[in-house]
Length: 459
Image 1 (cartoon, rainbow, N blue to C red):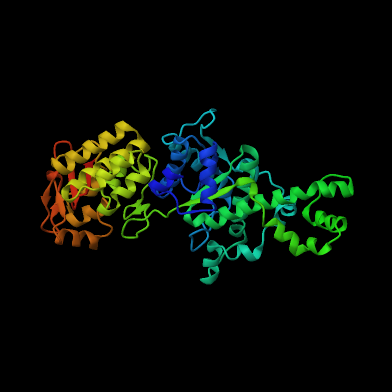
Image 2 (image 1 turned 180 degrees about the vertical axis):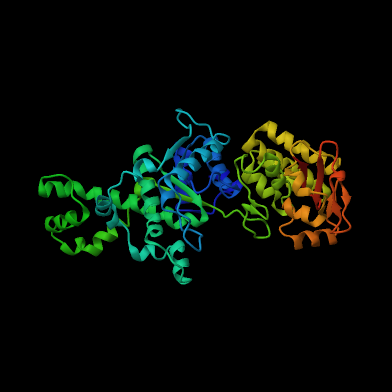
């Protein structure tokens, strides 16, 4: 817990003191769930992945729970409207694509603290609706479910919340029960928006355990298999002299006093910049972890552009660097902080894409930014000769390559002096860019400001 706290991973914890004692005493199995709603996770999930990494580095056992089942429902947390329904085939493809990223951060195998990867479709796809309602539905209070932020927000805004989405928290709670029973999992970790769902999972396991403590008495009274709570409670009333101690109210109070077999919940903070902006996306789109959706160079560049105030915090959360070294780096001022940003970008890219990709990205950035050249990893935009024709206005070329979101934005970029072609400032937004301006390799370098570059190739 000290490591997690020192590096900034803890937002809320159900019982921090007890969890700290448990982690110091024995190996703890912990899990985080990841739904398969896209072919890749983005940097918003990186804080949870690194939390699992540090748990494993300190001797504990991580479980990566792939949401092959829950992805068919869709988590309403933090959403203003229902997620788009995904076909089972798409979920399977997304799951396969996402799995590969974890191999860069965790060690999988059969050892005591090797990571496990589990798919919740293993048990969720086999559930019988009526049996599940009878066995577990009675433990969930609709009154309490309506107070969950994911539900409350929609209702207050009078936005539709489907019964399908309403069930998501029940399935997530049941995941914790299954993982506890199958693998002895004692800790669930999630983002700050998952706090209510995590506590609900703890409560479900606790209520199941509490009911089981009554079963021997019911079996003695009836002489048969363990009974459900609605059958157990009257047996207790009949067995004891003080009936008021076994009223429905007293019984439910008893259910709320257990320890849920030492289970814990922990949430990580929302990933934001020092200015308070939510991270994970840029103007160009999501910052994906899979290299086929975002190149290692663009990934490196994203972290290189970190705001000065965030360097120390991101070094703690997203790298393995020792705290003493991080303190030295975050203390750098002026132009020297840029060296710390390069180290940050290099370390994070190395973890996600490997040492070679990190070094190549750094070399490309050096050639592009410091030497005015063209690095091997600079993004490429392929332009058909027919599309170029005899020439295109400069602003249109910046729009086509998405260095500007629109023609108007491209014109403002040029008027503000932020646009360059082959390192030459563009003075006229309507300047005609013709085939003659491309080099012998049929290439042309565009720059938007100092940090965004694109190589246009005729092909």
